[in-house]
Length: 116
Image (cartoon, rainbow, N blue to C red; front, top):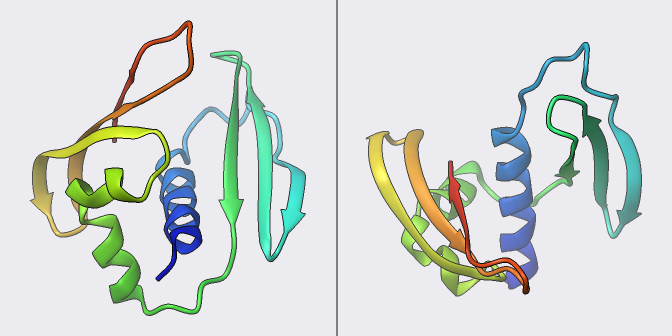
């Protein structure tokens, strides 16, 4: 599996993880880009002033292959751009876990913490 597949899977996982927000104050999804079968949608979240994104595509992989990548948190820094560190805080089941990551970001910011 190449690096592009890993990024697509990460985008999908991020989009699934981010499925939240009050629909009354969250704008509808707007298609921003469509290239090579990957669609990028964005929307504005009024509560935070942030812009949320999701990426969708179709993968020619078995579910087991995708889950093997998603559940191997310790290997994420080897293929995810700008990821300094990733580790599992607590694994409650094969499909439910808490993970902690540190992202390298450009100046003037420092590493950003992320808990999923």
